Image 1: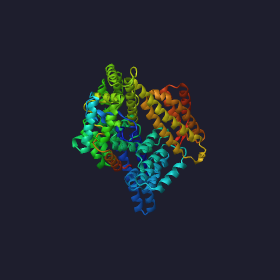
Image 2 (image 1 turned 90 degrees about the horizontal axis):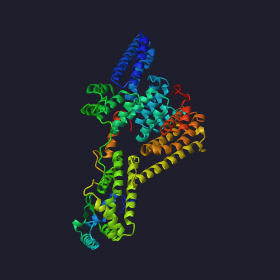
Image 3 (image 1 turned 180 degrees about the vertical axis):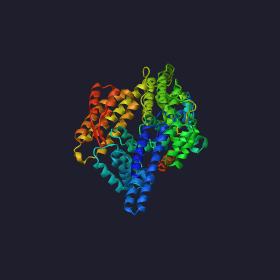
Image 4 (image 1 turned 30 degrees about the vertical axis):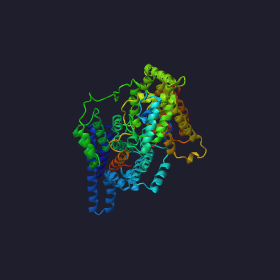
Length: 126
Length: 507
């Protein structure tokens, strides 16, 4: 569960891919409750239930896959990993700024083109 | 009848231009109008004389008169509006070198306007010609750097062009006409990027003499930022009327006029944001996530506040007690609570280092004892940046001892490019790392820079370049308080510098 292409895990990944959020479980859920939830979700994903295909996080909804569910329950079986996951799940504020880059007033490529046009119009390059 | 008043007006025209270059107040407009009026008189005198000569059958003298009395006052206009847009490099060169009144060393101005024309219509042949001319002009001066910057701009490399343009300020040799063009390129570049603050700084410091276009753009920047001394609507209109490309700049004028003139007493002077200090773990997480959305926009204040927030949250007794209790309940291995804190700290520091590098920020200045995040972050940023600088200084020192090229085979501009790149890296690292990193980095800069300056002066006879390095080292020595380096720097900087404009002695 690491950020794509980065190798190192970031705090934002700890929230977006938190096992508790993936399973849709409370951080104080018992081991039995977590196992039951994982099995239920795997079954629903197998049958293609639309409500199982996404899960809620403070950063907005994310896509849920069977691999993600299996990885989440495996993480929570390890007491130390569960402690870490609980720390992030329990303390993450309910709503955070979206993790994707904000949509600026104009996309950078457009701004660059605009800057180039102005330079050229004023007699300079590039 | 025509010649004497013509030369008087030519002198008057030059005086008006010199006065305009030294001014950035309302008198600029007055001097610019005077310069324009005197050019008009010169043009009329030239036309009248050539017509008289033609009528009396002296047509060959009439041609000379047109060339030297009519083309002369029109030279800068012809360069800007004809030769440059059409990419006529050689025409621009002759107009600049022979006809434009560019003061001493008119060839320098010729080469720069030729490079300007080349940048509009790049060609391999033109670039080769300019490179040959540049190589033949030794020692290197501001004009050679400016023409290289324009060639680079022509290739579409705005970042390196900007760096080279700005580096001319380190050169002791000053061709006012060349500096005007450099200032205009930077002003247009800043306006195109919307970097009004950068433009305002150049205007306030009077870094470059202003062309009418630069003066207008500086007025727009002052109005956009609501800074003190912003021109009123009428003055901005006057600046706009003086500047070329009025159809393009109309939109900029209207946008600037739409911004009300600020009351200087209410203008912000600190530039700091009012950021709430995170105290709990949820606050620290929220601040961190907000910071990571677009690291390049992370401000120094927000970054410092996030670091302090993490330190407080991870040091919080309640958080630690909760972790210890949960570790027991979950039957986690012994010491898990401390290990969690260590792992979270390491992960947070890794991410903050990446954010600091992207936003070119330094470790926050501690007012008290640094926490685990602040301490690890400071260490990582300092060492990472020092390593990069050390490698760069070693590469620079290798150029002096590299046997692959003999001294005659080396291009002076390549040495300058290397120095400018290193200077930029050093400045960025020191801005981010603060005085502590500056003190650690200075001995590397001093040792290598000093050897390079001596080599450039003694063996390569590149006096202006050598002086620029010595001046930089002296400024740095003064900043870090290195007494030995200050003494040596003063001795080196006191040397008389031979340039094409004469021998220059500083201080």
